[in-house]
Image (tube, rainbow, N blue to C red; front, side, top):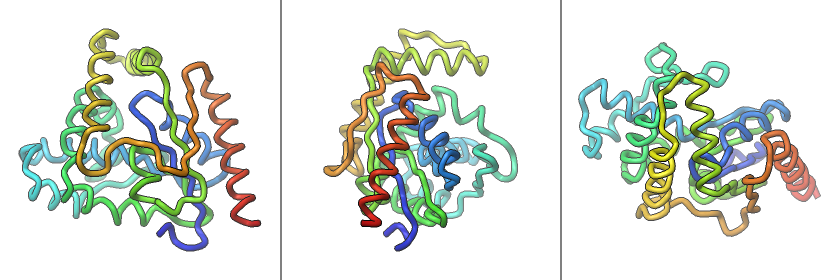
Length: 226
């Protein structure tokens, strides 16, 4: 599933749990490839809006997903050759992504794209169904979580640093609603894989979370070698 000899660390969790930042830093520490699966849905939604495709038109969205002109350049999303990283990190982009993500045909269209990211020497993938659907045979599965209050505060700080005008109370409501939507969707709902290790980052700094994940990944690789 993940390319026989290619090790995969799958990190799932809700919005604001820190999984993206942690996963990227873990990938860099290991010298592995990194997959931000959430960016795929954010870019697809942006591409659909630009192409005037309704976000509830499953067949057209799946067709766009099948030939999505996306590549990542040093962690930045490039759509049709242009940097769209700032555009896809807004709360509006996140809300759009959560509307297209539940569509079965869209998820099927992006599945091969994601699995093809598992290349030597290894892959760290973050998302909401990395350990349950995309890489069910991953060597290491981790489910990151944190309180809604902490996640809203983190998101608030992140968006303010990028120059966005945001309201923390609105963020709290949006994150709570996204949690309900992601956990309740029929296809690939947000949930820990049965063999995932749970990590609550509410009281952890990013550095501490990265160290814990690196330790878990190293332990899993040791078991795989044994």
